[in-house]
Image (cartoon, rainbow, N blue to C red; front, side, top):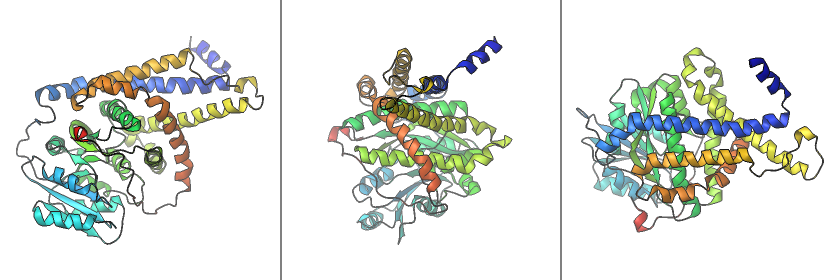
Length: 436
């Protein structure tokens, strides 16, 4: 039987291999995510949801102090709300540290005004923009607590999110970080509605499954908690990486620190709602993934990093899949212009039986993940399901293109140059009923 299998494999054409990988890889990963996500939900999440829920966090014996860090750059439209929600945190002992990273708008004046009225708020000013990693490091070094919660300058923290996160950080000696559960605020456009489903059915499910299998690709840069001792061991955030959150997640786990996912730790955010803004955001994410893969590839071959092999292999295969899909598209359009050898001819891009099977699996994944995530959405999950079914049409193509572009962009990037940030596309502002 084994010999027959290899004989059949060797008899396949290059086109068969391409189409086989393009079809079976996402099919296999979808079921990996579904199984891992369901396992996480029934073993780690369901009881907490029914007993507590986001508004009733599990108690902590002798809760330690925590520090909420807000690095910000040109956030005059958002920083008042962000600071107000952070200060509304329901936790016995906490402080808020806002780091103004050389803003050129009215952000510094707004922060000084708020600090004068709020004794829990401290402000650090940089004369020039240094990059988010440097801003985070300054906040961490200035913090009075060993447990740090970082949020973006436009994020609105749920009042009980800090307690949900500190419960993990103080609950185990090897817990280096915990990632929270971002929720999309702006959902008035088609892109906004699709992203609501994406964060529920794609990102949330993947984080649940990765936690089940042992390692998480990255904490969320929007909301994450850190043990300062763990950060100190790995050297805090690297200033030359495009995505400091992916980089620090890899270094922490390769140093044998545990990263956990807490779906009850909610944070409300704005996302891009223009194709240009979405492209820039996703290209940055893709470039950050390629950067860490290239930088830490030698360390991955060490036996001590074996628990990280699954995550690294998954990302490598996803980049490979993007290039395979690009090649299939190129072969199809070339075939319309010039005759190609039979083994390299792509007759159609329309889904056949295998495409239908992949589509059904995709819809099953969306349904399962939205069912799990329904506790954190005030809108009915079937309403979100209607919009998320359009996800593959746009976002698979977008993910493919950003992965293809990110590899040469990363290879050509000047090494050791400091990564600085610009204000991203925040999308359309919500109406009153959309507010958290």
